Image (cartoon, rainbow, N blue to C red; front, top):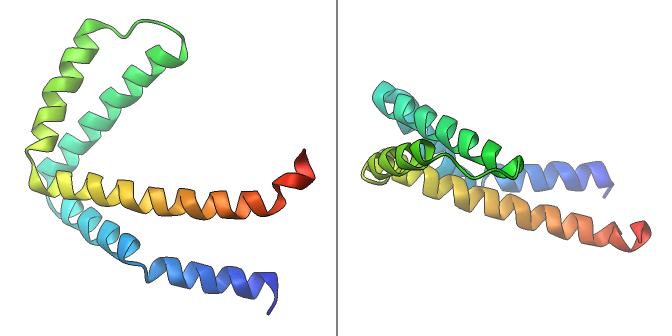
Amino acid sequence: MSVKDSAMKLANEIRNSKEYKDFRKNMNEVKKDKSCEKLLKEYQDIQIKAQGYVLRNQEVDKKVIMKLESVGKKVSNNKKLYNYLNSEQKFKSMMDDINKILAKSVEKDYK
């Protein structure tokens, strides 16, 4: 089996994984609900703003922290968003594990 064939098989297995199927299902549920989609975007925008402070080695503005906490509570209390974010985290974790396995197979060549 060629490397490309193996990659295609892996891609198919990823698409058929529980993690990916749950992520897609929950993402579609959020997309169907415009208020959920809007709240998710607001939450992500605030997270990016807070991360910007951290990347610049600055203290995160208190207003940004308060907004993040406020919107974060709304997100946590929204079952669709909670399920989406939880399934997104599980899918990303699976993909991170796959990437680590692939990177480890060639890491000695980069040292």
